[in-house]
Amino acid sequence: MSASGIRPGRRGRSVVTGIGVVAPTGIGAARHWESVLAGKSGIGRITRFDPTGYPVRVAGEVPGFRAGEQVPGRLVPQTDRFTHFALAAAEDALTDAAADPATLPEYEMAVVTASSSGGTEFGQHEMENLYQQGSSWVGAYQSIAWFYAATTGQVSIRHGMRGPCGVICGEQAGGLDALGQSRRLLDTGSRLVLSGGTDASLCPYGVVAQLSTGHLSAEDDPARAYLPFDAAASGFVPGEGGAILVVENAESARARGVPSYGELLGYAAGFDPTTDGTAARHTVLVSVIRRTLADAGLTPDAVDMVFADASGVPAEDLAEARAITEVFGPGGVPVTAPKTLTGRLYAGGAALDVATALLALSAGVIPHTAGLGRPAPGCEIDLVLDRPRQTDPRTALVLARGHGGFTSALLVGAGDRDALKR
Image (cartoon, rainbow, N blue to C red; front, side):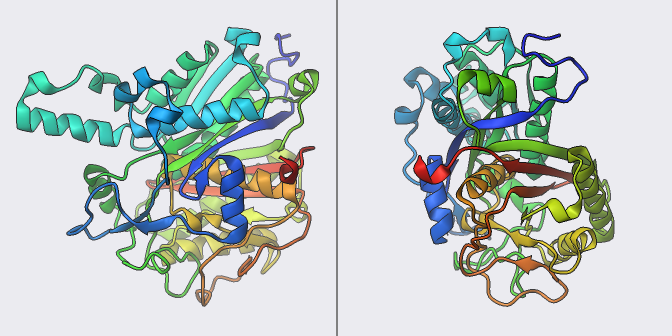
């Protein structure tokens, strides 16, 4: 038996006791949640560089984030913005969970994060130095700051977490995959896991790389640029930020005397390698949803709300809507996509959706999908619009699809923490 009291191979209960958020909707879980309830968008014209001349000119930027105030000074020039976000979110999550790493066995704490583009902005600046000044101007930290595992490494070093550490690269789906991996780590001896994902690719190099998908919206009006499941949908808006969660064994959390936001009940993942047909993506998503429910030991009628992937690409939205309808029936479950307030955050998007879902369960509401107008033909889902819906939900299914065919789902259940009192 492991130190956590769980026998390897035996599924224990995994609960979330801390949430750290750095997002276009605000820094900190409380501010983010206030923005979600109010439908306050964080999408606007790109300010991190001059977007004039680029086909994409709006994005979800994190407001007021100053790395020097959020991250130890020596780490700021050594790491990229996506790592700065994760270091800040991890610190907040640990504080929220009342978890002091110095008091826990170092080999029983683990870190697993999701990454999509790695240290894009840091890498761009170093390439500029290379081509404009020469190789001697390229900094030594380029070798580690761009690396997609840099965040996991820096977070684990920062908090003395020497248990299993890893990174999962599944684009938008990666955040759910990382949280799914956190459950496995808790079942094999880890006591506490920092998990989630962040991204920060809003620089010229990063945006140009994203254009290759053909799925970004070229709409200049921030209020009209990202409209998933809407008749006027034209693609999605890129964003930055994400969330880091403290996931721990329920027995360990109980022994520490801390409440939980909720429990990770079920998880599954799939992959569709095709590049053309949404029919295949629909089939894979149906399978992933059903396997997630099976993993949780629940039936579709036990799901109280669905956080949609919400691509914003009409064909993909239709495929997702049909998958949800096939599993739950026409209008069989309320569906929401709060990411219309942030844009798609790539590796940080699904982790932020899970954080939002847990906050919603704690508050007893289903957040609405802000900014939409006329539903797209064929999307026969009960999309929550205009205002939050007070239904006291107890479970939430989070869906995520990543570019290239990655598909994942995570089912979370309500915990014993009242978010409104924090």
